[in-house]
Image 1 (cartoon, rainbow, N blue to C red):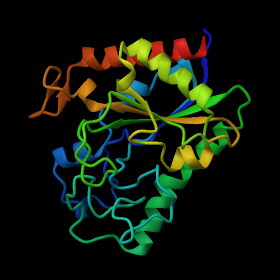
Image 2 (image 1 turned 45 degrees about the vertical axis):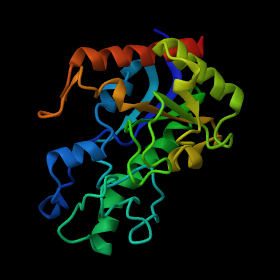
Image 3 (image 1 turned 60 degrees about the horizontal axis):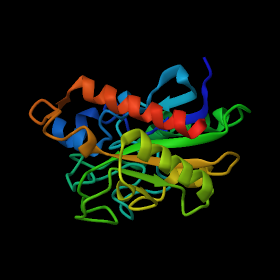
Image 4 (image 1 turned 90 degrees about the vertical axis):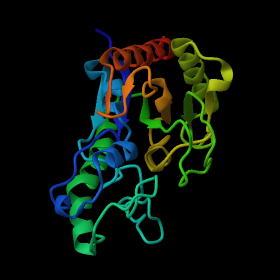
Amino acid sequence: MMKFPVLISIPHGGYRIPPEVKDNVILSEKDLFDDSDPFTIDIYDIGDKAIKVMKTEIARTFVDLNRSPDDLPPENPDGVVKTKTCFGVQIYKKFLDKKLIEILLKKYYYPYHQRIRESLKKPDIKIAFDCHSMAAIAPEISPDVGRERPAICIGNAQGKACNYKTTQKLTDSFKIAFNLPDEEVTINKPFSGGYITKTYGNNPVPWIQIELNRKLYLSSTWFDKKNLTVKKERVEQIEKMFIKALEIFFS
């Protein structure tokens, strides 16, 4: 079987609380769910269909792999470690001291980025995708606060991480695979790419950030808000559409 020549990164798909901070966390299960990219591992982890898939069990709430390691509170409450979720909910009884932050970064942050750098040395990887989900309505912490979002956003760091020709080809592939009109698959709006895309883009291969709107699978038709569960068949359907988009893109 021919593999897609791609590195797929899923940095926000985990739900696990690091044991180093577990006794200090005051979030509910729903708060943690809302601050994560729910079910993105189920959607984007296409296994051996890609040359490399990277993911983490640790929730972005505690170690955000898509931030600079020096992006810290209080300057940024939504940095590599956080004081509040993206919906403004306090995370800890008492915020972490410098020593504990260093332990979290050393154990969970730096190894992920080292794996990215090692993977990018593979000559058969031609492009990389940093894969996420986004809330249907932008939360307060977002640049597009309060606005409805498109079904899919493709980000190339304003052309710095990947050229627009390749970006447009991927955008068109998603439109076809998901059967969406032009206005529902945007480029760089509302997200142009985070730390991973900006850091590794065209260094040496192009990077594109992919954001799927959670309304595609967390709408009431498929999602049980009480139990925080989604119909398995819907997630599988979204995964198949993602694979179809890649097939179109790489054909």
